[in-house]
Length: 190
Image (tube, rainbow, N blue to C red; front, top):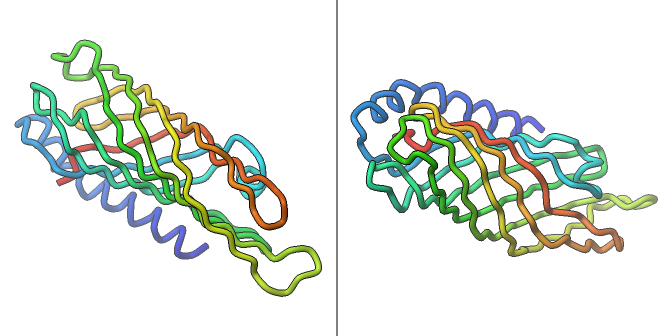
C-alpha cells in the first residue's frame, strides 16, 4: 500500500512541477513528446470492485501524432492501478493506443472524442479460505476503449470506458476488467 501511495504522490508532484512548462508550451505551441495524468477508475464488478470501488493510478502518455495545430491526437498511454486487502492484491496495467478527434479544432479549449485498442495486463494474488500461501494469476487481455473529454489550455479531463474480457482466476471466479475512468492531466509535460 505504501508503494501505491508513493506512486500516486510522485505522479501528483510531477504534474504540479510541470504546470509552468505546460502553460508555456501551450502558449508557444511547441510539441511535447510526453504527458502525465492521474486516472480514477471505477471497476464494473467482481473481485476488483470488492477490493475498492475507486482505484487511483498514474498515467504516462507518449504523443506519437499531432494535428495541424501541433496538439497530440495519437497517444500511447500506460497506467498503473493497484489495490490490496489483507488476503488479496491486484495490479492492473492498461497499455492503450488512442486517436482523438477534436470538435472546433481551431479552438483553444475544444471538446474531443476518440477511441482505440489496448493490451490490459493483470496480476491477481489471493490467499484462499483456509490457505496459508498466496496463489497468483496473471493474464493479458486485449480490448477497446473510447474517450470523451475537454481541453483547457494544456490540461485535459476525460471520461474513458474500457471494454475488456474478464479474467478467470484459479479459484473459479471471474475478475471483470472493464470499467469507467476519469482522467485529469496534461499531454504536454516536457
